[in-house]
Length: 400
Ligand SMILES: Cc1cc2nc3c(=O)[nH]c(=O)nc-3n(C[C@H](O)[C@H](O)[C@H](O)COP(=O)(O)OP(=O)(O)OC[C@H]3O[C@@H](n4cnc5c(N)ncnc54)[C@H](O)[C@@H]3O)c2cc1C
Figure 1 (cartoon, rainbow, N blue to C red):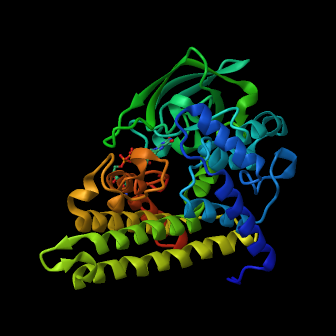
Figure 2 (figure 1 turned 120 degrees about the vertical axis):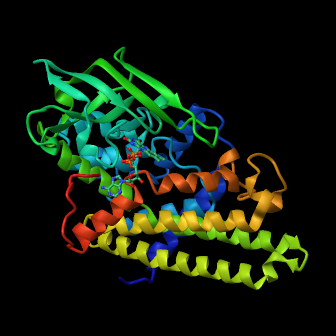
Figure 3 (figure 1 turned 135 degrees about the vertical axis):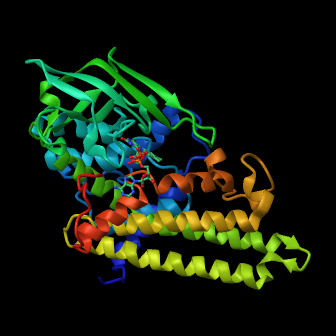
């Protein structure tokens, strides 16, 4: 890949940076504020950039999208509230949806008029997603849905869900699954929040009791759900790897600054050879991550899909984040455990409007989640072994 930016790319980056400097909000206390920020990003042309123009996108190049993600990470800009709609549901509908579904749903994802969640995982179907038991029965004029989902990110604020449900229990398990768009605003759907160790409630359990999915809201054909889920997951794993590098470097620089202020019996932590060695190793690993991200970007620029190689990127950055956050805790000691307030010089991000989410304590806890969502590290290793390296398949190859 040509790693040099063209003059047009540089001008675009300058425009994005100037816009963010002028528009970055100080805080987003309510859901309405978060929706307004989302709309502002869209109006500026920074959301759904790669989508077809016919559905509200701009058909922008992957490099332009990477520049926006990179600049947002540089200033710790809050993400769009309809993140799953933009990154997963929209791309899935663009590939597999009917024209009527695209017309009905895509624009409202971009404008955050309808917030989306992903209804895949169940209590006994996470890695082994094909074992899911939620049933959708054909009732002639609609589908009747019964079952339970879990770990639904943003379930509490969602208007619609992308659902995987079993439509044919008689065939091998991954052949009997279909994909639906289901309204979360109906009497048959109950959403219960799940409180995390961080104290916040970003997930939920979703109970579906005689809920209704409309006939025209089946995505693809009946029993095609497994193939559709693979599209969804490759976007979830491969997206925005470059912005993660920028974010990791931002955190790394904060940690280095903190070591200059931390004093032990033998002087500054910054001058301790063991601390320096460990920091040096993490820095080198972040640089490796940069080249991995550029490889994904290069594929996308050539018009290729992220593919199973996106598992390499996902495995690498999430495992690295865990190692990095563990090192930060080791160096910062009690300062790393402050979850509110605390001295600014030891905060993860002083300019952050993310509140608790801008603390080292939160970042440490969150790093554990990274190696689980969108398929755990063990599952990524299976995918890399089987689909990238071509090694023999494990006994149950229908896992997430
Ligand atoms: C932050 C976060 C957000 C999420 N958001 C959503 C969401 O919006 N929608 C949604 O549907 N789901 C969501 N999930 C759920 C996520 O997809 C599952 O947690 C994940 O697939 C793992 O499933 P599980 O939790 O059931 O663990 P299990 O599948 O029970 O796995 C337990 C352990 O066994 C290991 N294991 C399992 N199978 C194998 C194997 N074949 N080989 C080797 N090791 C194996 C796993 O690696 C893991 O360590 C989210 C999860 C997290 C952490």
